[in-house]
Image 1: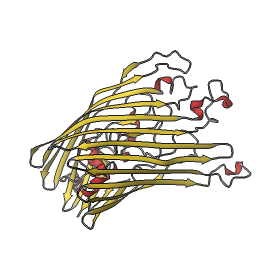
Image 2: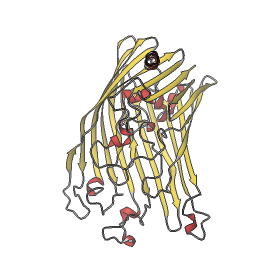
Image 3: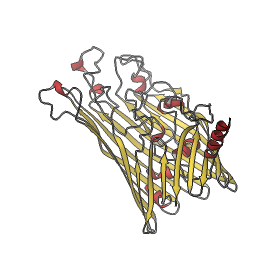
Image 4: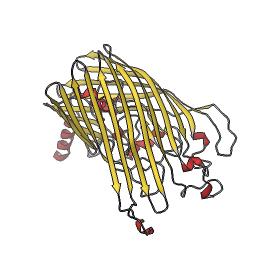
Length: 452
């Protein structure tokens, strides 16, 4: 009995705290922008930005690195996944290093994309922006082929540098790499010295802050996964471009952003024959598959201080995503058909969150997300490659309805953030599961940070 009481007391202490700057656990509760996932054959997923556009948090430094000037001199660890540190230098400058971003969890690849509405549940049940919040998002690799030798990026590292020289500015460079020269079937070729699987990822961001105006721009370049086999050379390329801004005026934060996402490659013609079963006559969409998304969104957030240490965050946005995914299998008439290759998503999300200091060492928070509108408009409505198209048809999607709770415990300069969940549940339900107990499976996310 004493053991159970002690365990409950310790965990109750961990569940509380004052406002730290931010963490994945805090963002998981407060919410973020929608995650966009292709319903076509590629199964790719992307976010508009890696952070939140409508409230402040340390994770926002991944889309606007000028925030390093506001969030310096701290170290953070996300349990089971990632972490890093940010430090000031010569007062006007700051630098930071972050490790393993987006590789949280079991290290596996993203699941195959379903065709059903509300597909984001397959990716950890998230509509959040941080890549670490869903099943490991290997920045490039493993999307366009089922061959086990195809590999994805591992152990990413993020480097930051910024300064305050009359205006705040910052730069961010991200890199990840993987190489395997011990491919199992190398012996299938008499000359196999060059056989290998590799993946590399490069991304850069620039941002600044000028009198409340906070523009940012980002670019993914030279990012490629490749596999050389005796009879096949498979290549997968990733190209991204994003641009946007926030503007702060008293408690209001209007924002706008655009992202162009394209993942392409030469596919695996030997694995996916056409409708005639003739591998040599595979359709171009299988020989050279690509998944393209053009995402743009606008919205406005508001921070209302209702009492000392108590804030209510509100957000409403409008998002549209134009998708062209020609990686579908034409033999699968019930699955990745023309229906899912060319469409537009329109989402109007509403977010409300409250965060309050119960004591000097305890902050409690809760967040709710609700899609007022979530529609998909198909350019072609055929269910098979040979079917008759009926253009411009709209379908209501299940959308997002989520309610979450979390907290922060603070002892001096140390803060521990949590998001309630169920660690024994499937990845898609860890955060969404309503069952919570004072045991080893109390938290879906747990983060620790130290500021000095």
